[in-house]
Length: 183
Image (cartoon, rainbow, N blue to C red; front, side, top):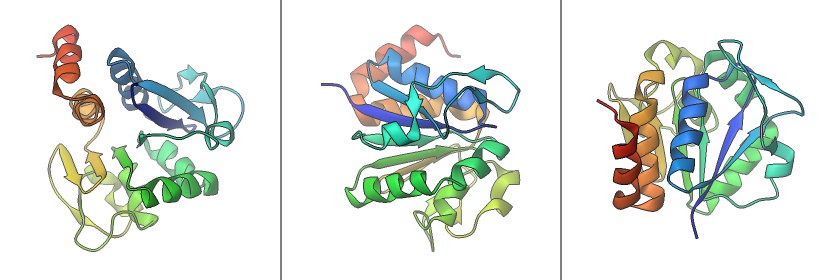
């Protein structure tokens, strides 16, 4: 049975991050639930419009192996305004399950106490003022306990493949990567 991942889409999310993550996971036969914070289409940071699989309220009833937060400045602020998302992440974290965030979204994890003190993380450098806590590393991907963070749009493919390997193993990751023809 393959893994199940939740990717919440908020208005203003970074298209490349949200779509590449969902796409790479699905290529690896991971069940992906894209959930919008509210009903209706989600308008991303570059004004593209997306239809989620379901709302976050509906997704809250499901069980996930990993929750991945896409970035985007406005999207990150909107994710952070969701008390339901915070509750879902807290329950998920209590079970020791995996959490990932890219670009500005690691700041949500910092502000909600998932990353604090000396916990290493990375994020889009100009977004660091959006959060407090944790120990910023100038790296493309940082892994700390069950939390994974990545830099931004340009690291979306490598982050998606990194996460896919955590979920489904090296063989599946390498199969998917080979068929993407990345440089």
